[in-house]
Image (tube, rainbow, N blue to C red; front, side):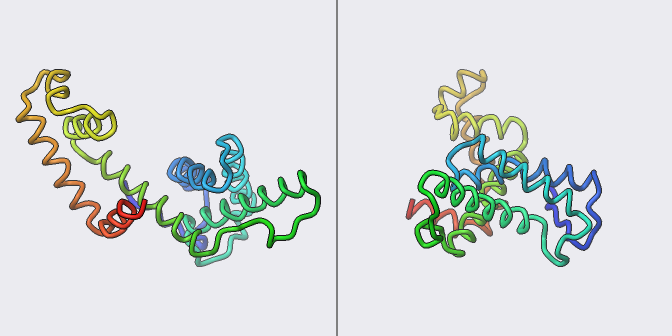
Length: 187
């Protein structure tokens, strides 16, 4: 999958807008759910960000990458939603009482969302049989012999396909290896 690097100074037409929406919608929803633990509310927040983007497509701050703009907008709208909900439930509340994450937390969450996208894209880029075997083992929890029985192939073929998948993923994700190890170690 090619990275979308639509700069705000580029005209945002329907095609590029739709591409942005299809590429980032699910990741932005997951990102919003880190702050607003309700999927429907998270989707509403992301939709409102895209609506706002479309309405202001001619006046977007130039020089910003759209990905950063989208994640920052979702973050800000999520915090606004939290603030508004607390005001609604508890009267007027100051920002100090909201327990809002720091900018470093935002950066970490954006990096985690980007990493998740990279992992998903790398898995999707595997050859079909290789991807199927990898998914059955890593996400469905099937053992090699169970995969072998299910697909009517030898255990050696399963082992070879898993080795191939891991080799390809290690190569594609080598720039993220330190982050992955950090996340596995601390979480």
